[in-house]
Amino acid sequence: MKLSKRRSALVAVGLSGALLLSACGGGSDDSGSGDGGSGGASGGTFSVYIGEPENPLVPGNTTESEGDQVVNSLWTGLVKYAEDGSVEYSGVAESIESEDNTTWTVTLKDGWTFHDGTPVDAESFVNAWNYTAYSPNAQGAASYLSRIAGYADLQAPTDDAGNVTGEPAAQQMSGLQVVDDRTFTVTLSAPFSNFPAVVGYNSFYPLPQAFFDDPEAFGTKPIGNGPFKADEDFVPGQGITLTRYEDYAGDDAAQADGIEYVVYADVNTAYTDVQAGNLDIVDVIPPDVIESARSEFGDRFIETESSQITYLGFPTYDERFADPRVRQAISMAVDRDAISEAIFQSTRVAADSFIPPVVDGYREGSCTYCTFDPDQANQLLDEAGFDRSQPVDLWFNAGAGHDAWMEAVGNQLRENLGVDYVLQGNLDFAEYLPLLESQGGTGPFRYGWSFDYPAPDSYLTPLFTTQSLAPAGSNYSFWTNPEVESLISQGDQAESPEAGVENYQAAEDIIAEEMPMAPMFFTEVQSVTSENVSNVRLDLFQRIVTSEVTVNNA
Image 1 (tube, one colour):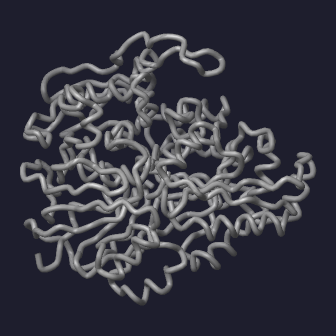
Image 2 (image 1 turned 180 degrees about the horizontal axis):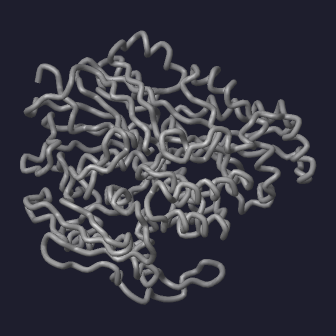
């Protein structure tokens, strides 16, 4: 993903985050290279392309796709997700139950251990969640815990300018209680029927005591509870090699002996290395090689339906883009179908909503201003009094294959609106996200988002609410609306996830009118592998399922 999956869920390459940024009730293509799964471990080591993670490898502070890929080889959460997006109790949780959708009892399976041999118990979850939520710790995924009672007490007070003015009132959320080694309760501030689905996300992963002893060292050499473990440090600009955890308690034990995650500054270089047999997997290949890769790689060319939406985000804090008519106009001036055909060989679908087809709640054409209409776009721009003599900056992260389609967007703005542009694509992914978090974007910016759990609110809450404002969240447009937040809250508190869809759609309608971000494409992901590996599959979150990968002739 090259996304922030506060993702999540963002996406650095083709993506989301974060992010994740991918990771819904839809499916992922089960196609992959090679034959089906195998029983025992196959041995051997394989290599995987990633971009530079934004932060050290700590689950609660990993909200983008590059770090997310590594973290999810190192950790297993309370639940996992089936290929149709449904919750599976194949993780650490034996059950997650509630009679009122407010107080939930989490019962853990016995026998799970961290890579240092210490037990994965109730306390390891509660301590991790409290640490992530405590605002002085500045964990990027903290906002996902905001539904838990007492979360607000862990947030430092701020003045009107957002400056911290004191210490939080508490260090532990009142809604978390350890019952015994294998049981803890979670009391939410309001009912939320989709809680069991949410806890599969990174910010809900457990942490061993070793983390609290030395968080900085831990982020370099993490200790998780997943199918692979870290025996060495992560080296910025280079990567990290993981090895199979022999005492893994899950039913998805690693088939290979190890994974070498290799950091590349440019996905084109990674793609060339796969062609040469020097790298085994690139999860998202450059757009301009899709057609040639299809024939060159044969059954080692993998296409996967993704939960990702690619957006053109707007810095609503910038006076030039504060008027929604400007944002509507820019969106309507872009011919998404033409860009998909010319740049992506029609492997991207023009987005027409903020809730994608892979989850319940999608409505075809719900985004009116996603329709290509240059005449209306010009009328809206005139009504807003937009200064067309000044070019707009178009921001995107470097080395991830975004140059061509962002340039195509700029050319269409020039042709259809008479507005020139300047490409701002010199920052790598680890630099790009901090720029957006600090309101450094001076014009429309590329943003990729994949769901963090399979539900429509995973496309709304993280991107368009106050609780998710950057840097603690993924709301990089810095746009909020009280009515949207009220509708999302009503959807959250519905008796069932299905019952809440109507409220989420009503919130989407307001967002689609205000256009703080313009949905551009629904994404199908193209990946390639070397002849060295088989059984390569991407999940709904656009992550390589590394435990399934087998090394040929190992």
